[in-house]
Image (cartoon, rainbow, N blue to C red):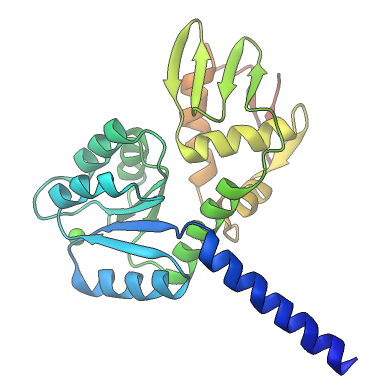
Length: 249
Ligand code: CA
C-alpha cells in the first residue's frame, strides 16, 4: 500500500512537470500605478504560476497589448490616461481578452460605465487578493474547458459564435466579451430552465455569492441590449424574481 502510494505521487509529479513544460504559461497584464498593489498582485500571480507584465501608465499598458496577455487587470485611476479610455483602446486592439477593472469608486454607475467600455468585470478597492485570484483562475478554467456546445448556437433568430465572440442579429454583428460569451453558454446549457444567480457566480466567476453582488445583473443588462428587441419587455432572457434567470430560445 505504501509503495503504491509513493508510485502514484511520482507519476503525479511527472504529470505536473509535463504540464508545466508544455502548457503555455498564462500571461497577466497589470496596468496600475500604485507600486504596493503591483507588488502584492505580482507576487500572488507569480506564485500561482502566471507570467506577469506590469505597466505603470495607461500608455504603457496599451503598448503591452502586443505581448498578447491572457487576462488584464486595469486600474481606473492612472496618472496619464483615464482608465475608461484605456479600456476602450484595448478593446479596439483585442476584442476578447478578459479585462478586470480595479476601482476605488464604489458607485454602481462607474462600474456600469466600465462594463460599457468593454471591461468584463470589476473589483472594488480595497480588494481581497484571494478573491481576485479566484476570478482569474475561473477565467482560465472556463477558457481551457473542452467545448460542451457547438461553436455556434441560436437564440431565436440570433446567432452566437463562441469561437469568434460574436452575436449576429438582423444581419448586424456585435462583439461579445469573455463573460458575455460564458454567461450565454451557461444560460443555453440550461435553456428553458431557470438558473440561479449563485450557480452563475460560482460557475463563471468562481466566487462565493453574496446578496450585494450585482455582477450577474449588470451582465444581463448588457446582454439584453444586444439580444432583445425591447429591453423592458425581454423575450429571451427572463428574470426569475428572487432566484436568477431563464433563457427562452
Ligand atoms: Ca491608481
